[in-house]
Amino acid sequence: MNTVREIHADEITQAVADLCIKACTLLPDAVYGMLCKACECEPYMSAKETLKLIRRNADIAKEQHMPICQDTGMAVVYAEVGQDVHIVGGLLEKAIHAGVAKGYTDGYLRKSVVSDPIRRENTGDNTPAVIHIKLVAGDKLHMTVAPKGFGSENMSRLAMLTPSQGIDGVKAFVVETAKLAGANPCPPIMLGVGIGGTFERVAELAKEALIEIRTQPHPDPYYDALEKELTAAINELGIGPQGFGGQTTALSVRIKAFPTHIAGLPVAVNVGCHVTRHADVTL
Image (cartoon, rainbow, N blue to C red; front, side, top):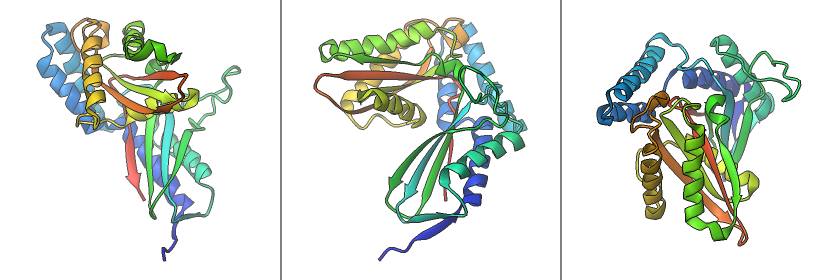
């Protein structure tokens, strides 16, 4: 018989606070590796020099424990809660919000959240976070904090295509999204592409694909080939690092697919800049 494991809300709050600071100051190794590879492969001198500056920026942020970007984003938090976990001392969501407030305050991170989308009053502590909770097996709590800057978020798009538009429609929409974004999301960009599900699920898929930065090929060869094809097509646009031209417009394209209705073909593209960040911990 499984025993229930207790995790105190205060421990969650501190863990989220630490993750907020870590995510905003340390670029994930996989993303940093992509930047290094792009520096080596970029044939255009101005683009190569721009990539070197971007890489140096990440180095300075790490060395001096400073934000990689002035836009420290809106906190997106994923919590995978083991079904044998019992949270004591408070509610999970309140503990997460408290952690975001603590992290953004203690870490001197820019607070960018407004309490109402129309009236625009700043909340003062970067809360509330956007929280996704998933119940899983086990007695652990795994949390991922992904601060999302809005220079790239604003360039994201969603379309409810029809099945007749097929794969060609999906490809055209993804490449068009990158083309319309241009220099606005601070390329080189990373794209999370969601395909399938429903209106709300396809947006979640795109965000999940963006955050799950893989260094290995897609487990489905069909989507692996599609990821490579889309990355090549976007790089052929010639937008380049920071919009100065070159062949490195996209560092990666990652796809997550989900079953959908016979009458639908939803597709969403979540755009990430070269500072596509996240940090995670297991309690």
